[in-house]
Image 1 (cartoon, rainbow, N blue to C red):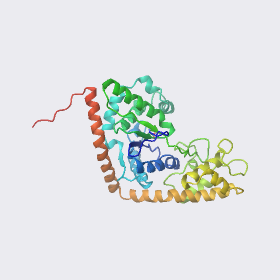
Image 2: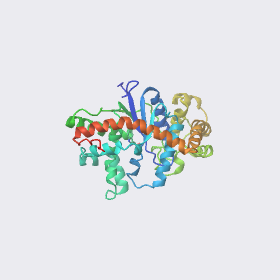
Image 3: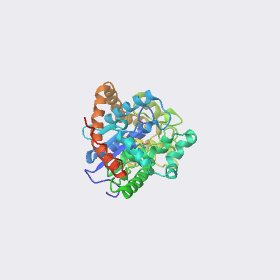
Image 4: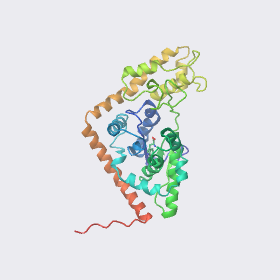
Amino acid sequence: MTETGAPQTGARVLSGMQPSGDSLHLGNYVGALVNWVKTQQQYDAFFFIPDLHGITVPHDPAFLRERTRNTAAQFIAGGIDPERSTLFVQSHVPEHAQLAWVLTCITGLGEAQRMTQFKDKSAKEGTESASVGLLSYPMLMAADILLYQPHGVPVGDDQKQHVELTRNLAQRFNHRFGETFRVPEPFIPPVGARIYDLQDPTTKMSKSASSPNGLINLNDTDKQIAKKIKSAVTDDGTEIRFDRENKPGVSNLLSIYSAVTGKTVPELEAEYEGKMYGHLKVDLAEVVVAAIGPVRDRAAELLADPAELDALLAKGAAKAREVAAETLQTAYEKVGFLPAAAPTA
Ligand code: TRP
């Protein structure tokens, strides 16, 4: 590993992203997807859509199905190359649920109850009605990871605790039953590509935004994008300067600009010296449309041929299963399950 936790070239990485709405948003795109796309150039990359995690809270079946396909299309449209990387849907690889059970049995109840995401989400659901699935969410995530023996797991800050638990479970299993799993490193992208809500620039851009105008979706029309940026909250004063503390609105616009164009924030500050917020917004709308418009259009093309898309995902699942099945078999043997003999005629 290098200092940032980035594994050596050629090493394996794995990540998943749970789509919380009917489309990925700009925060998912610049915060994760763009990073994944870079990752696949250097690493043996596995990316998947965690639909099993999608039922840990109440959900609509038709919506889940549609959203799973949509997300796959957006991943590919955003640059995940299904030939180079292994791209698949979690429920297509039954080993995830199978290993999750084993890991659930070596996790302490208190340990699971202490996970921050569980505490937040169960508080939202009401602790009595929160599902046991929500409590087991991190063990399923650990299974997702450990099945593939990855060196690194590219995740955002919010998932770091889950990767930490994964490491603990891997070490615990190895210690109790013998060396089985590689202990993976969290691989937090170094770039501060954190995008905030356009209407409330002190909270992260997320589906649970209080106003739909706060987030830009990857399937928004050019017009919607421009409108949302135009109505973004700015700050007192007129100066275009990065200052998260005192100018969260303008700072967020600069971050987005920087993330989609690759220009640095100081470059942008110099470029916009003496100009007005309105200028910045008009230009920003243009560069955001230029960056995500083609992704939206490509995703729509892919979705127009769902059979072809499903075939790509089937290929990915088959590739994933080759690795997952081997790890599961080892784990099953180590834990003491009697191997099933081949049936005789
Ligand atoms: N929990 C992650 C999220 O909310 C998604 C996820 C599930 C994941 N399994 C994973 C991420 C394994 C990395 C590795 O986005």
